[in-house]
Length: 324
Figure 1 (cartoon, rainbow, N blue to C red):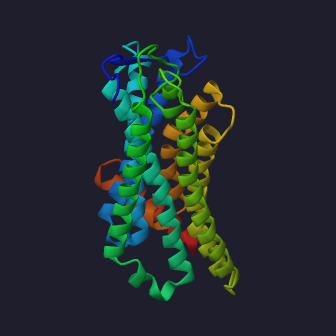
Figure 2 (figure 1 turned 90 degrees about the horizontal axis):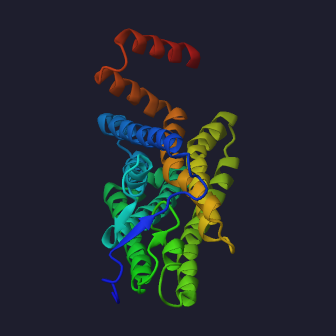
Figure 3 (figure 1 turned 180 degrees about the vertical axis):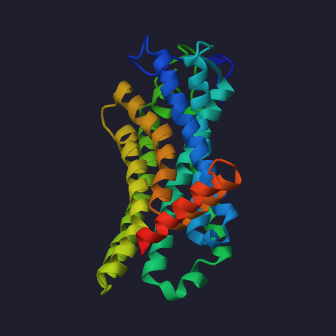
């Protein structure tokens, strides 16, 4: 990497136009981060501890929960650190690592949502062949494939960004190292690289989104052919959680990377929602709409001592009477 030794560290200036709000933001973002970690860990415990949930859909949900733990952990600890009054400096290697892992985890989640849409397509459109198509071997290959292609995409974007010479200003007008703000600090013409990055960052989510739309258009056609209203309702409810999570994931990507005129404050606000709020909401989206996950979560909470036995019995009785 050319002139790498010229700039040895960068200074993160944080979220634009939030001077004097550090304490409030620290409490708010720390709460989001803690709830994100707890929620996704509970989903993992619920799925792992229940043999009933050892299916392809929950296998991919487990991987999503793991990545929802690591995704906000790329930028949040450093942000919380300087919001609490510590140094805003980040090393050159630390900045490159932030950018790599942010795009590696984000791209992998993008591919993972596509695989989860394919899983729902097979389950609803080809139920008799589901166990054959989504075999354990196929699930492992798909899961490894999402990480492999996510790593390739992140490596390309990181190399593209840090092959540039950084020899002048080192103040990053953002709360973590991302492609648009880093290109502004480069001591070279970045117009060609901006176009390449725009195409790369734009094509990958767009391709995945089109595949997801294709899967769900086929799913909707199959659901509409179901004669019973109860069967249609069950099929729609199975997919609604996934669709909600997809919208929460893709909307910030479009707003941040595919707008012609960037706005630092708006980008930071949207990216905070993408980094902290969406990973926090995913456990709620998937667990509150799913009786099997809720049942397993109650057992996990009871085993951990957070849910008294009498209260667990009352909740179970209420669900039984309500369903009857």
